[in-house]
Image 1 (cartoon, rainbow, N blue to C red):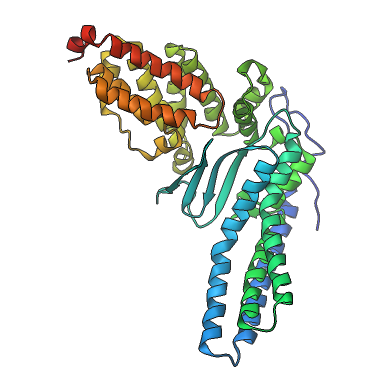
Image 2: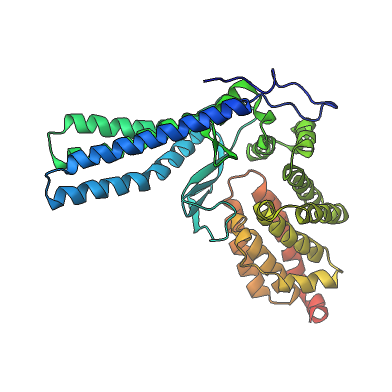
Length: 407
């Protein structure tokens, strides 16, 4: 197969804003896509033939066993694959932000996991999955990413190998026959994901990501500069050690990366207490999102929703903004976006209660927010949230003087 690239290397574009991605040519991508379809079709054909041979002349119990094993193979392939990515990421000391396995979304915490069912209106539907892992910039990020990307297929191939070995060691029995579909399906998916092609015509396979990582820098892959920036903060590194070129590159990349660049600026302005700057950046984020196609707008909906809530909170916390205080009580704190930042909703409720003079409710919500914040795996979150909670506590201390005005 041809593996010619679209560029000789990661050369800079005019102006030096963003590099040219070294990639497979469109012709090579089409060929690999055809090969992936041929491979998957042949493996499904082999599975059907094998099951037909195994079922021939058997009783109803073995047939049910084989059908059950086939269903188990199809159900298990995604969890095994995504857990392989997860395991490889942790092995390479990457911070795992989210794990999606079919309808389940998992959020690793400092202690334990948070889990939810993805909504029917999720931007990425289906029975597949993905893992978002953030690299530690103090390490070889490209090598770490290559191991993480390959981890899913390696898990499927190891699972298939274990099934084959077990089938060889076991005596002839229905259980031994049931291992065949398990091994075949995991082998098929393990190899399929290592082929460099576009899944559905737009999403790069693990194999294509491995190919791109082998020829380009980590931060030069589309959208991966954001992961490197977030990995910088997840590793507990200070903002003044962040490479400014990464933020410039994000602004030069296709949407929604410029909006995510604005989001980072919005977060920085809020942490610095620059309310006017934060409001200006949030307005720019809204304008960008309004120009997006519906599916792209949906992909950034959570970021916008959390930013809107944070903006109202900080304006109300600053005091003197009656409009913000009224908007605070009207916020929808049950919206799915806030699941990603569990400390936000109770903090907002605590401020609302404090402004209304309900000290008991405010302190209860502050305690809930504290528990979530201190369990956040990102360094600095607990400290920042503690400072916000202290400002709410200060409002409670002055409640006798302000309760009448709040009413």
